[in-house]
Structures are given as C-alpha cells and as structure tokens.
Amino acid sequence: MRSADSTIDKGKQNIGSVLIVIAACFWGSMGIFVRRLSDFGFDPIQIVSIRVTLGALVFYLFLRIREQSGSGISLRDIPLFLGLGLGSILFFTVCYFSAITIMPLSTAAILLYTSPIWIMLMSAMFFHEKIDGRKILALILAFSGCALVSGISGDGITLTGLLLGLGSGIGYGLYSILGTIALRRYSPYTVTTYTFIFAAVGSWLICRPTDMLSKFSAASDLAGLVFLCFLTALVTAVIPFLSYTLGLQTVEASKAGIIATIEPVVATIIGIICFSESLTLFSGTGILLILFAVMILNWKKR
Image (cartoon, rainbow, N blue to C red; front, side, top):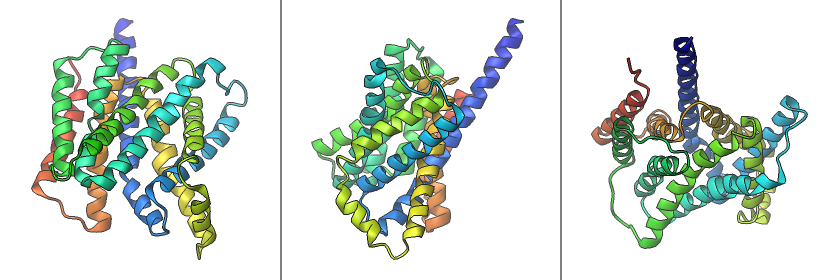
C-alpha cells in the first residue's frame, strides 16, 4: 500500500515538474510580445501594467466561472497577497527593467537568475526543506548555464545596478515562497487571481496611465493592439503563472526555482528562430547545463 502511495506521489511530482517547465516555456516567449508592444511606444513599466491588469481581468472571470462560491480571501491574508502582488511580481519586474536601463542586459539577466539561490535559502529557513547534494549540484549547473546563455559580462555594473539586479532575483524567488504558503489556504486559481489584482492596482501607480492611454487612442489599428495586449497577458502571464502555481502544489519551492531556469533556454531558441539571433558556443553549452540540472532534479532514485 505504501508503495502504491509513493508511486502516486511521484506521479504528482512529475506532473508538477512538467507544469513548471510549461510555465518557463511561456515566460521564455515574452521577448516576442515585449518587442511588439514596444513598437507602439509603450515603455517597459507600461507593458508590465498591461500584462498584469489584463491578466487580473482574465483570472477573475475564470475564477468566478470555476468557483462561484468561496472564491474570496480572508482579511487576515491581505498582507500575504500584498506580498505576492506588490512584493513579488511588481517588485521584481520593476527592479529587472530598471536594471536593464543602467547595465548590460546579460548582466541583469544573470542577477535575475540568482532567484533559485534565494528560493533554496528561504525554503530551508521557512519550510525546513533539505538542501542535499543533488540540489546543490543542480543549482550550480543551472546558474552556470544561465550565465553562459545570458552572456558573461561585468561591464557597466554599479552599486545601484547590482542592488536592483539582486532585488529582481529576490522578488522573483519570493513568489515561490509566498505562493507555497497561500496554496495551503486557497486554490491555485484564487491565489493567482488575487495576486494579479494587487499587482495590477500597484502598477497603475507607476505606469503613467494618462500617457499609456494616449498611446492606445493614437494607435492606427486599435482593435489589433487590444488583441495583442490580451494575447500578451494570456501567453506571458495567465498560462505560465497558473501553471507554475499548480506545479507548486506538488513540487518543492527550491526545486521549482531551479526547473524554471529553463526559461532562458526557450528565450534563446526563440531568438534564433524568430529574430535570427546566433547561437554561440557559450550559449549552447549553457543550454546543455540547464537541461542537465533539470534532469538531475527529476532523476528517479531506485
């Protein structure tokens, strides 16, 4: 009987890992939509606001249809969702895009992908997750792979840029920690919905809404732009965040953070296919290292 339960648990973990890989693949496609929306004159913070606002709308409608009752949150959990929406999603995005403006993109990306380190440390501190040799090896391989894929660069680093980059990694990792706590009390659909609602409200305080709305009114193809915005929210926010949150139900936060580093692999492949970007020896090696890290984490012990 124990063996059967163990097999079921292992199967759930495998499904959770697949869901996190799916989330990372969708996140990896973000560059396509960011570049397309940039052509309409939106700055990065406004693109973030569009993503989280429309994402919140889609999540809320989906939640109301799926869970007609019991879909609210307790007043005592508002600080938790403030942490998820403002402290995680909005904070890490603002830090990341701000870091991009004052340092090379490759350096900002490397600092963002310090997130598995922070997740592992916070998981050990709050959830008493064991840091074993396999996780450490996978973490080293994943971080080294991200460094190679993003490009090793130390140019243009300032103290402000360093703090912003590390802040993006911490904020990114915080979603796994707070999300795991929220999932003990609410369904994945409730967690993602209220996370995005709080993130959307916060984004409107910093996105210069009057300027953003003027760009919509000036668009020559408004219907096409609105469709692109909804597609952006669906592909880069709704599907990946829901998949990742569902995956957190059965996968340890520290393990999930390392698996999600497959995102830059997908981004690199999309860059090659869609934007004719070249695949260097460094980035190719980095892709293999990240894939090895994911394989090590999911290797079945006999």
